[in-house]
Structures are given as structure tokens and as C-alpha cells.
Image (tube, rainbow, N blue to C red):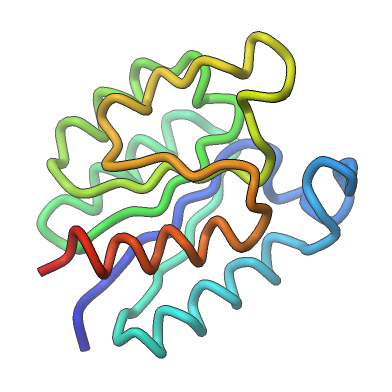
Length: 146
């Protein structure tokens, strides 16, 4: 067993499967969490999943990862574009964080083009749908978790 990865999903991601499928796909959050947890097990990781629509709860979850998990996969949803508090939490815990987005934020509305968390994340994956979460898991294991 390599260790533990925290999968954090932010606002409105609990509504996957209902949100516009042409942007977010048809999978539910439970579907994505299962896929990531199963893939994690194959790679030797325990994957713990968390979702909240509340910025404070996401920050608390990130803080709880300090010295407890090996890496974080984070889809911060709309908080990506303006939450300096989440950015500071990521920077504080000193863990590799994979920023993931189902859609390509760079090809959507102008306000989505900027990620205030990108600079403190290890890398960003966007536009690959649910496969982006799997790619993030692989990259974390191969390049960031020793």
C-alpha cells in the first residue's frame, strides 16, 4: 500500500448527472468517486472522498489532510476562480494537489479561464471528463508520491 489520497469535490458537483450533460457528462459524483477509489486500490492507495458546497468545509478538509494523506485531488468547482482562502489552505498543507475540472475551463466563459489555485497546485487537468480524475491519480503516483 502506497498511502492515502483525498478526493475533494466542491460546489454543485453533488449534482453531477443532473447538471448539463454536454458540459459535465452523465456520471454522478458517486460514480466518479467509485471509479477513482477502485483505480486507487489497484495502484495501492486508499482514496477518501469528500464533497461540500461550503468553502469553509472544503478548507477544513484540506487542513485535515496535513500529515495524514499523501496527496489531494481537488475539483474546487466555481471556487477555483476566486477563493484565495482555498488557495491559502492548499499552500499551507504542503502536499501535492492535482487540480481537476471535468470541462475545459479555458474554453468556457471568460470568468472561468482564471484559476487562483493553479499556482499552488502541482498540476492542472481539465477537459477530460471523469478520466481527468484517473489521470490525476496516475500522475500523482508516478511523479509526486515517493
